[in-house]
Image (tube, rainbow, N blue to C red; front, side):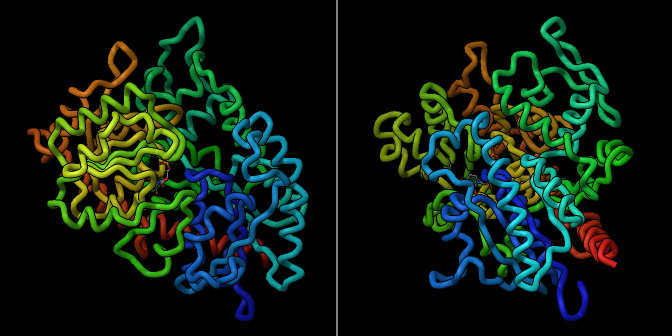
Length: 470
Ligand code: UDP
């Protein structure tokens, strides 16, 4: 790809969160594997945190190109001017405008610097969480794309809300159903919670909706989904935006090689997970994680702990370091025969492991796609935002699991945890769920394999970059 002397050079900009880093980095690897040079950038503080999982050897310079398939991947970070421990980072109201002020000149310089180094940027792929990135590429007259990292259904929902194209629940009509083109109507409980009148996270809603501000400046809207999964929603959105589905963005473990080795973990994954899983029976383990942001309170951690114990099934539970103290006293030791608690796992490796029988998940979009791509049945336990529609579709439409509901108290209870584990692993429904999960695994795998729908779309996108240059 590219001219004979110089490959096309794509710059991928990711926001500083695990749920952003993973799909952007996986896209970077996919594009590089097609023979392009890809530079992955994010803020310096995140660069420092992920560097042990991106380096192939301790003495490797992070700027050094790493061979990936037919091409190369390199990393270059920009400083956002704040200390990594600065508490203002946690406050989007302060961080987002700061990042924009610092990021605009920093990214402009970074892009200009690529040309000076003899590798001019042919296309910028921008995280729409930083919509001003499109202004930077536009000012430098470089074609650009955004990567949408949630489902197409969720894109459509926010898009319609942002442009006031249909009615949403309000204070006066909190139960109003939402009807979007190509989709069955959704109840208020099934739309992203950030759009509900009761939503307390208005700063986050503003940041999410800001993604639509500059969309017209992007040549392409790349989406981490696949045609077979969301056909009707994709067709409807494609009428208004230039959608290119390139997902599921996962590094299929069986593909092995350099792609899977370059990771972007913000926390150090527990090394012992694989060995522990190796010693368990096929499809017996309950893997539990609520992703990189959500945390459970003390009561729910206690109920989860008792429910997992009561199920009698082996479990691998990711509990963040900050909430380890909320586990029942002595639980880790008492449950050691049955289960293991870790602070972070290499989740895709866990899901790909034959001992993993089901995934009790918060339904972040990356986790949703990973579980579908590895054919692992789910117990859905959404916490906020798009996790609600993802949970709904996993259970009611893709039919790959069951739901763990919160009771009237607003909390889960141990009997329900235990009941869900049994239902998904050994109840009469388990067989059917497992067959559906395996069917999705096949469809997802085909979409990204050579000649599959997403693979062809990615190649057409790369051809499109080429055409912009001539
Ligand atoms: N993840 C991981 N190890 C863990 C927990 C999560 O590698 O112990 C990864 C997971 O595979 C996914 C990402 O972190 O790619 C979380 O993204 P997701 O969209 O599922 O949820 P978020 O963290 O954004 O809520």
